[in-house]
Image (cartoon, rainbow, N blue to C red; front, top):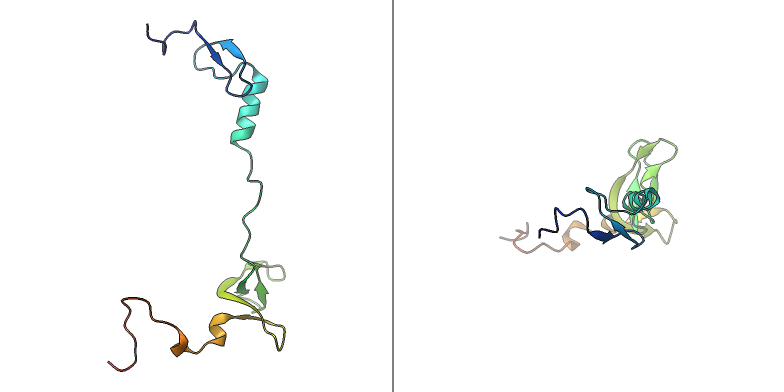
Length: 118
């Protein structure tokens, strides 16, 4: 006998595990279990995704820099990413690593041509 089309069999509720008589497409024993299953499926993520704390951002409008914050509250706009960085030990302002290094200090990627010599 084909159990897929046999509505007289019992099955376990997907939420509480209670056995109930199957009827059509029904997967839950009660409305409460059906609602609980829907709430579990559509639940918001528990921890929001946040910006990396070691990334420096700069507001395109007022040019204020932030560490780990992507939104400028004063201008109500999103800041652009400058790269990894932190606070400057001298002036305590946010600074990115790329601003501290000279262009020739960057390592060429594999397969990338360098501008030196050849």
